[in-house]
Length: 225
Image 1 (cartoon, rainbow, N blue to C red):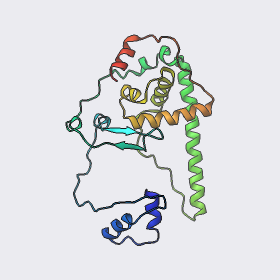
Image 2 (cartoon, one colour):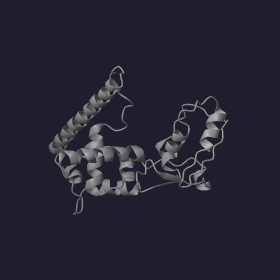
Image 3 (tube, rainbow, N blue to C red):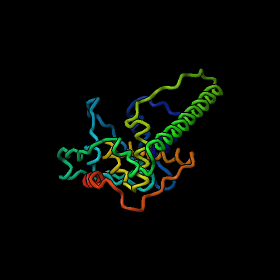
Image 4 (cartoon, rainbow, N blue to C red):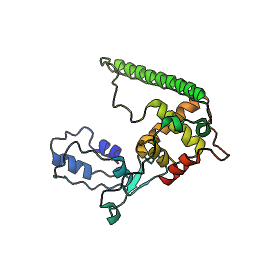
């Protein structure tokens, strides 16, 4: 929808809220898109923090294609009017989660793999930066130093560990998110990026076919879901 709105108001000075709203509302497409727009004059406080538990409790149905971007948020119901209970507490002991019985890799092998993937990630970042600087130079713009951005919720070793557990134990992304104490979107993004690095590195994580040891940990993971 926003791509069509952008096309519709290109070259038009957005001089007032009325112009913005009316231009958005006038957006149509040959395939039948119609847009309703209204100015929201309410005030909203800044800096409100939403917990992962509250986000997980939203009545959202995620679509098969890129569910972190495409989803349906259903109307609120009585079941979602109260503050949701926090997710079950799990011991986020990375030493235990990195047990070779769970990962299928010895600890030195896991460390070596993590180091190799981190090097690939750094190479990708540098390549993107060079490409961006080249584009700025072609546009006659001054180069700038890369920005650090917001620090990740998960350290890179934890991202690799989460991805290995997801692939080897066939754990759903929601379950992995609970185990690592982060949101569904955070864990999905980490797993997607790490799987790409694994493919580039030529490493395949085979799903386990035999009963996995450490039944107490597995039982806690399952009970959390």
